[in-house]
Length: 68
Image 1 (cartoon, one colour):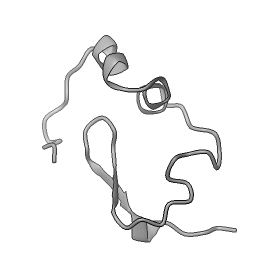
Image 2 (spheres, rainbow, N blue to C red; image 1 turned 45 degrees about the horizontal axis):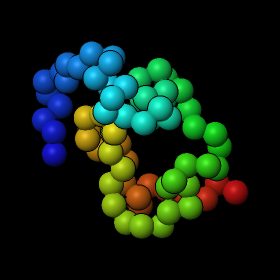
Image 3 (cartoon, helix red, strand yellow; image 1 turned 45 degrees about the vertical axis):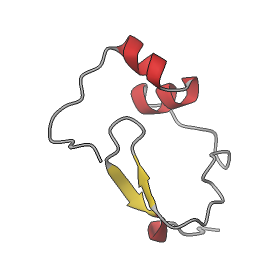
C-alpha cells in the first residue's frame, strides 16, 4: 500500500501514460463515469475500493447499498 502522507508527484503526461483515458478523465480532471456503467456497479465482491492514483482506501464494499 502506498504511504499517502507524502504527495505523489507526476507530470500530467506521466498520469496520461499510467491511466486509461477514462481513469485520467475521472481521477485527474474531476470527471464522472456514466451512471450504472462502471465495472464495479453490480459487484458484490468483498473488499476495499482504492484510489487508482495513490491506492488510498476510499470505502469498503460493506458500505455499498441499493438505493432503489
